[in-house]
Length: 195
Ligand SMILES: C[S@@+](CC[C@H](N)C(=O)[O-])C[C@H]1O[C@@H](n2cnc3c(N)ncnc32)[C@H](O)[C@@H]1O
Image (tube, rainbow, N blue to C red; front, side):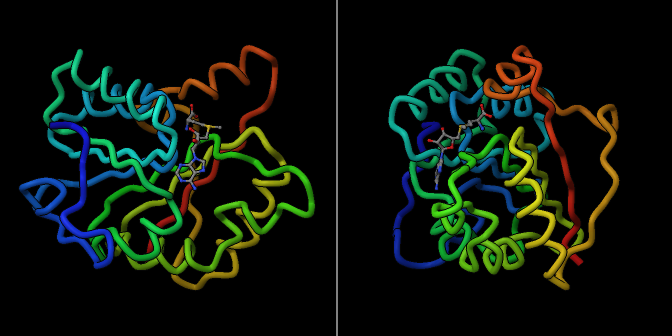
């Protein structure tokens, strides 16, 4: 079953409770939307496991349909909030890459604290769940969100920024990203390594 239901929502999970083999790389996408990116990544990399997190039921269902149609045993979806999951639920030092792609921008100044990259719970969790050498990859069309992310991650000694050219490795467009590009918007990208 591709819908992942944690055995307990109030303690840290073990890697083998999500996917059976902790020796396989685990990648997590926060706010996976309709699953466009997750499905393509799981097809391209059958040797890795992929967990998508999404809080909206309709989008979870779309992602589940894509996973089922493509017959992907290495992709699952968890319907839960990203900050809590990263902060408390996902296993420590278990994740090879964590993707945050076109997150909700919360553009109003009074909502800045809602941006995931401005939340201590998320930043502490990010440092906790990534393996040493693991990576956090962010794309956004929102310049203010991007500046916040650069400032937040730049203040954390656990991370170093890496180069990320567009053709560095297989990295499919998300649904929202395609939409923004079609409208002529710029997409900002950044990539950090957990030291
Ligand atoms: C702008 S959409 C982008 C979706 C997808 N990443 C894409 O690029 O096509 C943001 C997604 O993140 C989800 N989301 C926003 N905040 C979330 C949170 N705190 N926890 C889980 N999902 C969240 C939304 O429901 C939505 O599907």
